[in-house]
Length: 209
Image (cartoon, rainbow, N blue to C red; front, side, top):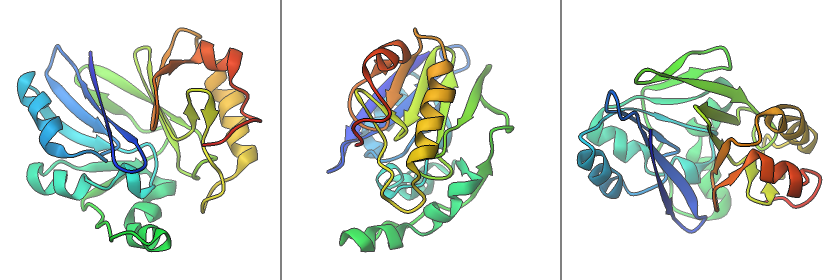
């Protein structure tokens, strides 16, 4: 499996391109980056983009998705509890005084019982509410895409609409920290880490990002 990271924007959001080497199927996780750069990687690996998958509904992770969708026609997926955030991106941006972000169309919702595939691989959906009510992590083999739930040395903020710190603590301690220590963690911002490192050094009762 090929994983490419594209940090971008004033918030340093990480967009991920994930390619199944066997089938050449590709997905984008959190479409916040310029599609030109991502598309170069897709073409380099002779891959085919199948869909965009969102960890949650905050605008910085979705800012380029309408453009990507307009150019490729791929569907966009988000947890059912965060669809309203995606549909109301202009409300989010207005609160921060930044230009409007138009939402993508053809949005498909999922929940933790849905089945999503990347080529022949199954994507395990792990619902981790706290940062938002529909926040999710995605486990593909030994790689966890944690969105804004778990970071290197920190955890997601809960002072935005839909945030709940007790839920976030539960999601991290009782769900994510129960995973194998060797699982790689690819967060929505900042550097890659592992479950084992965060269990040892990161208290979900401490700093928020």
